[in-house]
Image (tube, helix red, strand yellow):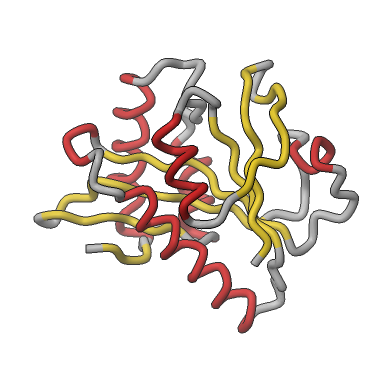
Length: 168
C-alpha cells in the first residue's frame, strides 16, 4: 500500500534510509546521517511511503525549496528556483526491490506535488532528481514516469550524477 508519510513515520523512514545507505556503494547513494535533516524534510514536504504488513518498506522524499544548496539550479541554468521541487532520497528495502515500488511511489509523489501546487502558493512547474548513472534501475524507473536527462555532472563532493527533469 502507498500512502503519504506522517510525522509518526519519521523514525521508520530514517531507519530505512540509514540501512540502505550503509549497505550501498557510497558513490551510488548519497544520504545524510542527520536525523534532524530528515525530520524537517518529512514534516514540511510531500513524502510517499510503501507499507507492507504495517512496516515501511520504501520511501520517496521530496523537497520544495527556494534555494540551491547543492548547485543543481546553477548546473541547469535556473536563475529563479521558485516553482521547482526536487525529489530527494528514494529508498526501498532490499527484500522488496524489483516490484516497481520506486516507480509507483514516484508517480504518487508527483501527483501529490501537482495537487499541492494547485492549492498552495508553490506553483510547482518543474521537478528534478539526481541519480548515479550506474543506477540503471532508478534511471529506468524515473524515465518511465516522465523524467528526462538534462545533464551529467558532479555533485555531492564530486560524485557523478545525472540530473533528470520533468515539467509538470
